[in-house]
Image (cartoon, rainbow, N blue to C red; front, top):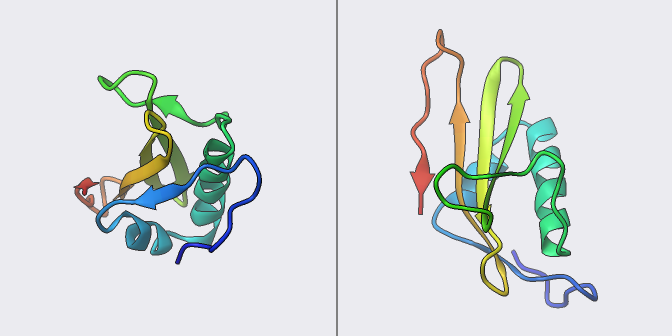
Length: 104
């Protein structure tokens, strides 16, 4: 759910496809870290874990978080006047298998 009012200097964040629900299914420590990184992006900053997504240039960023042997990823864009969260991914360790990347 979106808030009615934004804080001064805060850019809107738009969730694409199932990305919000996917993120909400991540473990709490992962949600906290990714939430902080997205909040920093909304105020025009760059979280120290945010790296350019391969092949897309500096306007598309990826945040990777490891938790209990699993890797969780979130990709967002800052190219527009808004911030768009467009995919999330949970990659399990080799023994557990992996979850496909959800793009839109």
